[in-house]
Image (cartoon, rainbow, N blue to C red; front, side, top):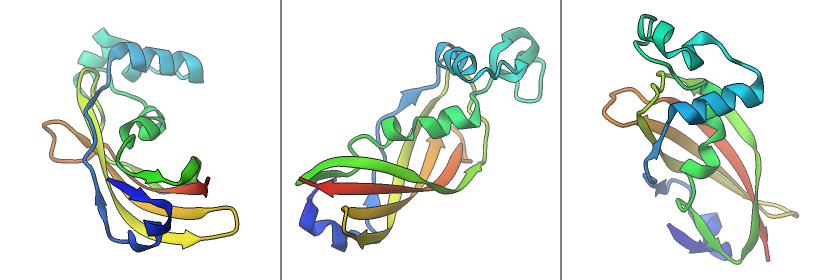
Length: 149
């Protein structure tokens, strides 16, 4: 969705997305495991994980969460904002495992818009869907500060 900075205040309740599909490759999972020093076998050992509880390696929940900026790219474009700053997330829940080789995408609903001195705070209820799965990978409320130009 494309809007203007003055129109942000009227977006509460607006549905955004879904966005583009992004593949959760084993390479991405391995690089995240290395960067975070979390090489648990369910993430990086394909042979052992195949016999494990998920039937394959799975992405770290925090990897899926860290992809939110990519997954939400283009869902809300604000003309008249010089930048958008990630303020944080509330109520993050990892609901279903994301197996290596599957694709995920995000959709959101604008939950609250609060103008302030530094910019306009936009809270969105985000769901990350797994292609072909009934249950989502995660749900979270994200908080972004849109700073006017």
